[in-house]
Image 1 (tube, protein in one colour):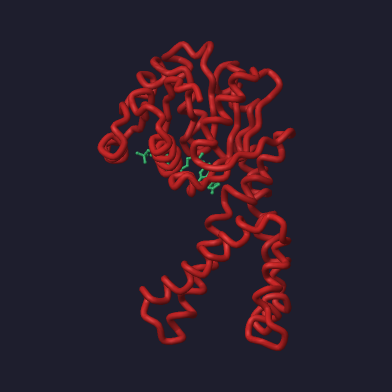
Image 2: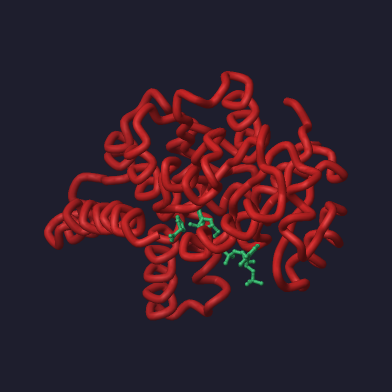
Length: 273
Ligand SMILES: NC(=O)C1=CN([C@@H]2O[C@H](COP(=O)(O)OP(=O)(O)OC[C@H]3O[C@@H](n4cnc5c(N)ncnc54)[C@H](OP(=O)(O)O)[C@@H]3O)[C@@H](O)[C@H]2O)C=CC1
Ligand SMILES: O=C(O)[C@@H]1CCC=N1
């Protein structure tokens, strides 16, 4: 891929995840700069990945061809306003990772810039196991789309969406979903401890089982997930009882309700910010 000069505005969890994935995939650290108001996260990025750092957004953006907008949604407007007043933005590609702010609104915030791609990554990007949804309006060139796709491919799998509203579906399915999984694992670990295991062993039991299960899904694309479930579920056995409990207590409704809540919140955020 092209190793364009790229600036990350906001050096939080997600920027760190993506930068770490990029550096592990051989993106030259010298071409990456991160900007953040406070120093500790910047210092850690510099020491771990040897990238450039600054506390001045303007300085990061001046030297960059690509600008990743990676602040919390509620801070985006103020951050962009300061940026457009202090540095020339024409000709740069903007890549937003923020939930709930559409490209039209971002364009407004950036004083009419329209070379903007929206992405929705997730934290496993730090291990190169990310899942990122991308959307580009028709005004964005094929070359810039390819760059953004290649960039996020450095940290995992990608999926383009045709309609911008589908990014909210990506949030529910992949951006937020690692947290659903952790909530499930936390509950499993707790119950495993209730069964008499110490914390460390309980964690090992559940984490290894879930890792193996996830890999089974990835390595068997020809099998429906329901078939993999059936393979574990011996007739009249233990799994059948456990799965029955989930079903009787409305697992489908619970999960779809949670995912719809994520989509609804993304829609609300679009009106708020
Ligand atoms: N976390 C996740 O799983 C995902 C998050 N996202 C999106 O990524 C974005 C960032 O989230 P996340 O990384 O989790 O958040 P974090 O809070 O970890 O990171 C945001 C960073 O922005 C910094 N910041 C605050 N104000 C400014 C400013 N004016 N200029 C530059 N930097 C600033 C903060 O610095 P300080 O702490 O010093 O104030 C902080 O380090 C959000 O928009 C979120 O919607 C998308 C997908 C997944
Ligand atoms: O919770 C959030 O709003 C962000 C977007 C997806 C994951 N974290």
